[in-house]
Image 1: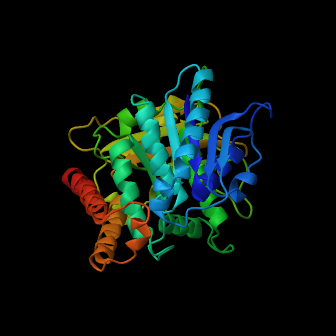
Image 2 (image 1 turned 135 degrees about the vertical axis):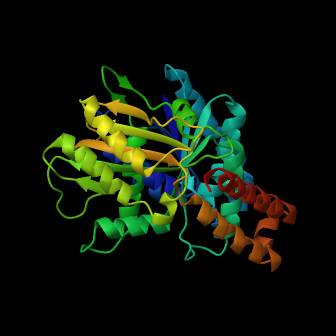
Image 3 (image 1 turned 120 degrees about the vertical axis):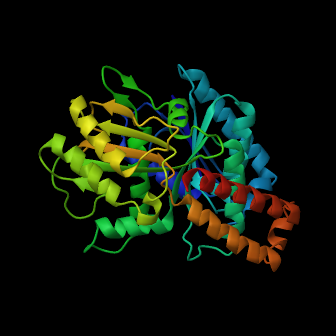
Length: 398
């Protein structure tokens, strides 16, 4: 099984929503989640019993360097690694870790990178997935461009796969599926991310229950180690037509489950931006839940194959996980699409590069990083690493 580490406000909010979607069957057994934050307010609101909770009172000032280099991070990192070790010792088979955090914050990005590096060093052969959420390009903080570059460099170096989301696309999706209702809130966006990722990360059930396997996922979706940014979207089939506000990206409400799974898939494909859909899919995976008929799964796969064609060097078949059980309460089925290639990550990375380069040329805000040991050469190295990410994707998808 995998163990989830939620870091910072963003990571813990999304983790809390996933925990809320999947209540414990006994109400007593703890979940394989470790919650980490430099402030206690978000973690205190999570009532689920988890494997470990580690909080401080100081914050990280939306500064990646402060989150990564602060002296107290050494002790905090060791506490998290100790909780991870204890959890690994009680599971039958440790398959890897899933880290959830922001791309450009202080705690989520900075401390998240410190933990990513430490976990990779401690368990070099275990897989690591990162669930990462990028800020709005309208600007959450003046340091976000620098923060994003440092985080991206670490993701490219230490992570095996990155489940990538961005706030602008989340706002667009929530606004589209909730047209006519109240405005988009941060809570809506967190629920949306949780619903998407839950479709991939939750255990699947056929003859027996199987935990999510990070290794199999990485092999199927990220066949090239330098190309690892994955878009994950989930459509849910509801037992009853939804009323008011609901947390899902796309919802099919037909009473015929077989037809609804295909319809839900079509709705899900519509949610991709047009420009993103023109890229080649380097790796694909599909998870179909609440499906007892393999013919239905094949019909769903045919719909996906038309919109997400693979490159010539990959098989035309889409790797598929089938589960007979419904994913979460109030639903009867779901379809999750994972695509490496059809992602907003590359246009966003290009924007972060351009903006950070201008700031660096003007030597803007550098003093906030120098006080924590980050020098100008580190900025240049991060810019080069991010340019390398863009070049790799252009070489394979254009």
